[in-house]
Length: 133
Image 1: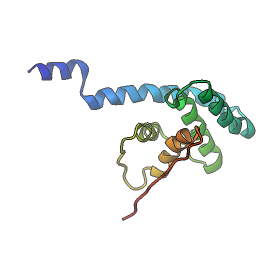
Image 2: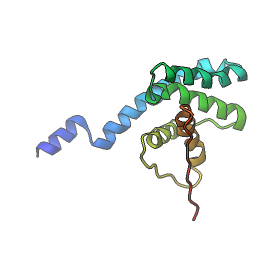
Image 3: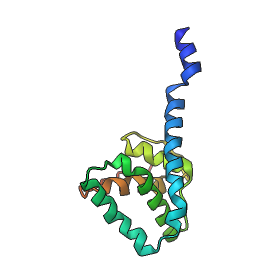
């Protein structure tokens, strides 16, 4: 009974996680207008800026919103594809070391670009494993 009351007040674990991730997506989306105005070279220079900020003590989680926004903008310019908000959440899930199940055509490869870029910033390499049936 107490569990039911607590769940109604605070929501399920999934609901709380979803709410937290949606807040991060809002931060990612807030960077979009400014990044659209950057030249290609200015957008490329964000990588060096992120690496410098890492060396000064910022964490990957602190860089995540802006870094994901940069990946989204780069994909829009080079591939003509813009990550949907739910794909941003998929990238955050992968970055946190969890598995995100996605169906064929939902953009798994595009989603993977987000945490791959972010986790490559420290220069230690990133491994991506995919499986086809």
